[in-house]
Image (cartoon, rainbow, N blue to C red; front, top):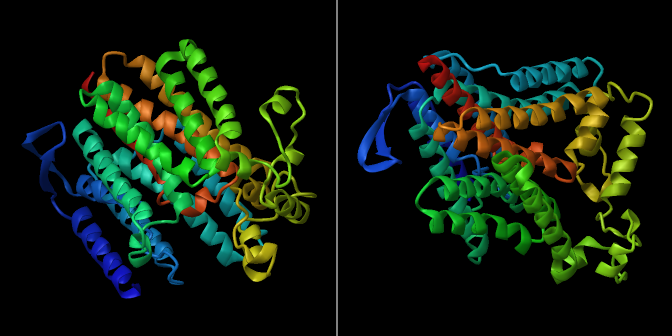
Length: 431
């Protein structure tokens, strides 16, 4: 299996280098299968990169091919930016992201480990480079649709691998189930958007349902929350204040799911407790009743060691990773299962506020673009997907290692946002 994954890595790297430096190739037009479209080199490389983010090529092999693959793609994005005919779009949220990365570099100056600090910076750099490259490479809705549809096809294959017995064990090419479930948030939103904007309503509705089901089947509470919040963000962008009844209905449905889906109820609350909906309605349920799988104790320990005493700037970029990798703590865990806790401990409130501001401003930018372009379907479609998916994915940073899985998780909403910026620039140039 190690040999096969190394072979897949070599193939992806070969075609990545080939595409980004080539003059391009022809592909089937996703909007009209009877015609062909000509993509240049950077556009072809983008379709390949966006579609294959779910491939970690590591699994449980003990060989971290995923880190090498991420580094290679980052280098190719930088090369692609130098080759692309257009400059990347530096929107206000992207400028904040750049400031955040600069703050991470500042955190290196007082970090306990330079190596772990660089590792953390590389993981945060990936979504930014993906976004910048997409904004430079993509300017046509055909490329937007082609890359998103291929990403959905790969996601569908990963679902099949997850639920066909032994298939995922024999070919461990995809990211862990937690990463896949977070990826499915963006694919679910993409499918929901196509339900409203294309004629293939039944097909796209089935896709939307398909991509929200795994997090319920696997009982991944973080991904369930992210999926529901993404749907609420979707309808808020689309209907504004008129979406409030829909949002309220989703909240009620989420609460009912906790109490009436046995597997979710059992995982949500501490063992030995019989928490009922009536108790919740009477205000008799507190965080003490919620089963955090000992995460709360771990978070408290990390905050005591790395956050308290230097709340503004933290203990230095990579502090948490350095501590968890060099000490046997929390039963051998290497990640804190909360990117927000890690941000606070590593880079303080300044880092946490900056990174959260990126998501908030991306959402409001997408909201603005959606309503400023009522007669432009491509901009409404792209802004709707980017805005809703980024809010849903950012919710998962609360209690998951979303940044660790950047290739499969954060790359999706930031990729969609980058493509939206490219489409928006072309529209402005044509006015």
